[in-house]
Length: 261
Ligand SMILES: Nc1ncnc2c1ncn2[C@@H]1O[C@H](COP(=O)(O)OP(=O)(O)OP(=O)(O)O)[C@@H](O)[C@H]1O
Image 1: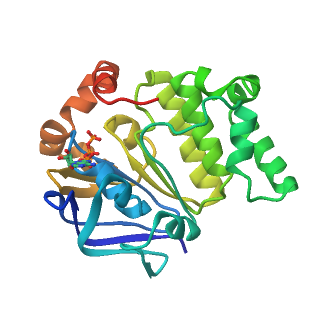
Image 2: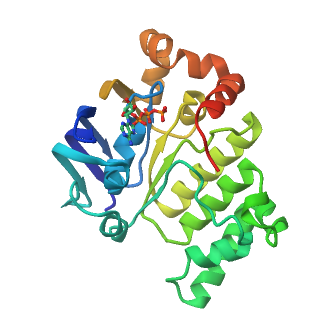
């Protein structure tokens, strides 16, 4: 059973900035949930906490609990959390820019037997034909969408049970966003993955998750099914309005603000 339970989590950066003010959320085994909300709401902070990566950002859990597969993890380092089957693709698209696509995949799967590595690499190239075409290209020369696909491929080579993905649509065209979402959805279904998706692009998230948490100012302000969120006029207007109405233009503006690769 690969599930996440977060209870009343409080997170502070640099000892003074309270970024999460008592957040509770749950992702059941094999379930897809999205964390939505405006800039600065605390979405990335929550996934950093779940992934054990807060110390890298000078952050720490002040109070509350994170339970992954029955084990309390709020004070575990990232490597231990990864050992529980959680793989996180966080901001910045951290690929090896001077290695080719194939080499990046090999590096990600270094713990696997050569046979398993080959099986999974073949699977990745089947799921992402574009990556196969670009397999001898250096990572740094790939487009944003191709880099996102490479990151998903690299994540698959860690054989995760829980996948945490921060803003996969960032900077992508609507068509590419749709493709990345489709692949995420297929992966979850085919492999029974638990998926936690952070998205500014609420419309994209609604297409593949069952439940959503809308955050603002370090709190969860709405929790419900994707359908309930879309039917709630206040949620749509006050918290998700810009993201839904703005579409690609909004994404581009956002991309300019947030630096990556
Ligand atoms: N490393 C850090 N040091 C200090 N404060 C931080 C740090 N990272 C985030 N914060 C602050 O914590 C709050 C929550 O930020 P967070 O990045 O989690 O929000 P977010 O919902 O992911 O926003 P975005 O969609 O813009 O990434 C913000 O007020 C932000 O300024």
